[in-house]
Length: 306
Ligand code: UT7
Image 1: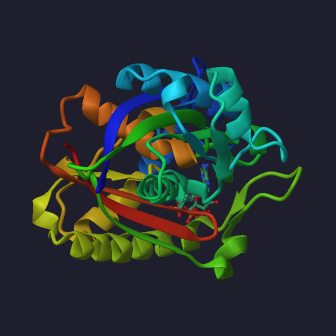
Image 2: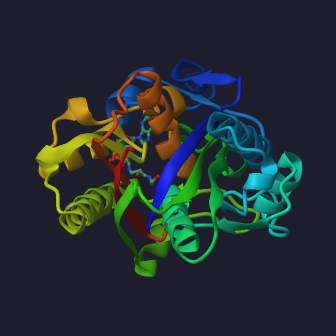
């Protein structure tokens, strides 16, 4: 019994905001942002619904599935457009789906959490699930706060998963949460994101390395067996530190944060899409998907592309 990836899609706003543009209104510089984060530009605009629906539609087209084929929609988002209803229901309506639809909020670990939820549903009777990671983070950024404004951005990515009795693409998961870190990265109702960047950085490297090692162990593979690491895109230095400790050379890491910034739940599918467009997804190869974020939460998964 297994789960197979059948299609992928992404959506990003047209509007590009460069580091130089942010430097016009903030006490920052392209040099600081590039050196400390790796981010050069980001996309700003849309809504969680509009971006998520477009990515979802593209994933359905990629899988050659119609809306009637889908029996569950799981949306990973930290930035639902409303408190109620779930943004998943708005996206489902826009796509012509009448199946179950719900949001999952695990911050930047959200996409991997949503894959784990989808796996559980497929093992217990669902047949085809649309998993979307979509964020409208710019809505919750104080654009006069250089700490957050240089990092967060908007975007969406989606995958269609199908039950398959013969094939299994999802080999292992290690998820976790530590609510003791809740105040390290937070956004109150009606407020803006704030963060203790240094402490998040420190913990992020630790939880990524720990969860990735456990996920590899559970899948029966070592770091040498990995074709790719597709990490959450928060900071190039976090990716460098984690890959170094895991013994994975940086050439195997997929990096898109230079173009998209930190898009939370959308960052892993955006990175996947980039890897696929560049011919880096190879049949039979293993990949590590790994995320961390507010909570703190963390999530690593080992996949094997069938
Ligand atoms: O999605 C998951 C959650 N988020 C993260 O993963 C973020 C994790 N943390 C980070 O990525 C990094 O900690 C940051 C990029 C947020 C900050 O980088 P840092 O190297 O940890 O810088 P810092 O906070 O230690 O600040 C260094 C200096 C400070 O000035 P002083 O005290 O040395 O004079 C800051 O005030 O840089 C200053 N600074 C800035 N300067 C220009 C902080 N933000 C900026 C800025 N532009 N945007």
